[in-house]
Image 1 (cartoon, rainbow over the protein chains, first blue to last red):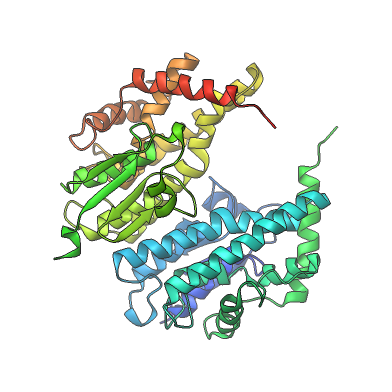
Image 2 (image 1 turned 180 degrees about the vertical axis):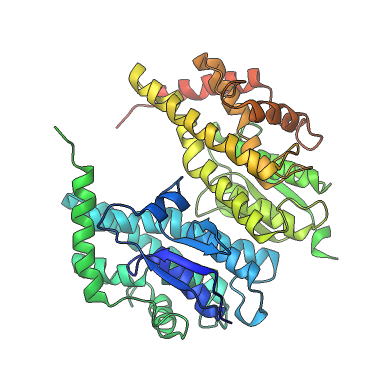
Length: 234
Length: 232
């Protein structure tokens, strides 16, 4: 269904923006893709549509902006309701489990991953690496519980947790290469390794996940920008 | 037996705003529950460690054989299992707005409130207070938009955002008492000031909201313990 009033303000490199695009692909909703340059000053549109956080993604539907990727996902799921492409499960307990693990990805796993990317000292990186690896083991356990033997956290089809975690796969690979470690390893997380392949190959996902080399190059520039901003000024 | 008839237990403490959210939600739905009080300063119970191994925090909702953690996730669960007297709005855009401000309160505003109590030095204290006041102005504006002239963020009844924000009022009042500053006031936040009283007097809230005095004493005790803990 072509929607002329659906817009995504974001960037190709952001996992949070990727989540929104994957959700729209799942629902077969077409949208206008507006690119924000993360290495440049923030655009007027961004500052106006997300004055509280000034961050992407911003999702526009009928001119109303909605911010925060997981909130956008739930909005998309509630507006475009076809059970074939449901993002959250229908059972309240299963929904609570999906929300719990998506929140874990954002509140615990992603911050550790980010610290590993921008870690200034060897000590910082070592501590962050330990946390990230621990996180993958916890998520391997969650996958066992939620998938119930099927291919995805969402069962037969990709769902809320798949999208939340899967959108990070490009960065997980880039950061892993930087640290010369496979962050999602066969040894500790065999099910996640398989899941990652299935997720990346999914129809709704494959055109959204970025090229890893392009992302690695961008990662270096982003890291430099962040470290410069954090450096004390005299 | 329908799932909604299974036994309900809430694992928590009387002082936690996050636990209060769960209790208020159950009250709104007229769902009876057993309140299992943790004595967190004495160490975490076996039940807590077993039912929330990931975060080891209260609240935990135990419903029949299922356990649910994280206060806002629990509130949404309660709203979905017992659909009468809805907590979240029905319109998707209004739901997104309520979720946005709830996340803002948890991720930005409440940490800034706590930062006032932990600030060392007058400059740090002033900066922390400034941040909280700035947040309250945003929330005053949000209240105008969400309430549409009615009594609550949820319009004519308390809803998701009322519960999320309202549960922080106890700690807000303790902070006001300890800092001597009226964070909610007639000049900057007149609508929120009135809303706060209405919220605290709501039938689903008043027996669960702790008295400011009791909370202030508890805060002093906690601070004493934190300072007494040797730093390694």
